[in-house]
Image 1 (cartoon, rainbow, N blue to C red):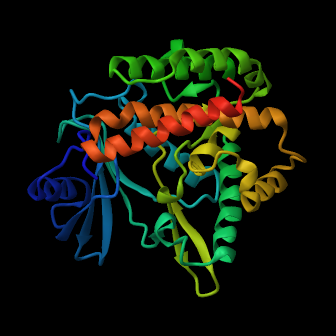
Image 2: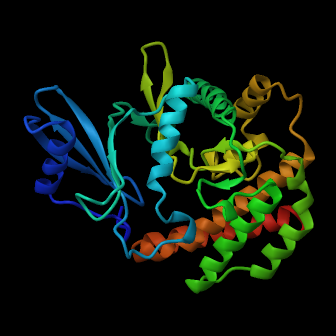
Length: 333
């Protein structure tokens, strides 16, 4: 995927980083850029002596135009991987090494173990509905475990006390205001007044969230790797936690099912989540919040198109705007 945010490295520099973190005698084989991502440059690096491969994820170079929430977010993913491996059974890669000092290159980066399965998005149409439902049910359990990790404030990961919010309502409204500001700065055409009035109309729904839960907010099929066990498919690993924040668990639903306008259509997933979480029903208030959180990710999808190639950016922008207006209609605004 072409994106202005990708900070590509030469093979010579990659081999240098490998030696720094894995020893001067670490011999590398083939280095392959993994092009499926849309934000960071990612490389698969063979290690000959170990007989394996590691993944290098390279952050955005300083000075690159970004949305406000995207600034310096790579440490969030590393932190989430570490928390999940320590506190849950959610399958995520192991972080092998990282450097955020910008001593060796001009951006953050980290090495992690390789996932050897296939992206769920690439196989879901050929593995049969039974396997798809099994993956959805498994995902529900893993998301519930993630949501069991609690924070001390609401909002994005930050050391800035001024952006550590006491209530989810305050945090989410500020997060949404910021992406609308970013959109205006990039001259994005959106129904700003309708969005703002909708948030005001339904903001009280956010008040029932009293405990900050870890929200991945990017758990779509492309970030889920699955493998065939011989008896069916299972989740091998989940990636891309850079968008993570402390908030409402339901916020993970519209990003896990970005093409679904009502999570109740995803019966296997929702039934499994309600069961594992001990909740009896998915309420009307939950349905409203689903639309608000879907509006937020769709607004992000429109705002970020400036960094893509013309045709991909155009396609994503048109689709996201169409879906955003659909959310507004569903909410009667």
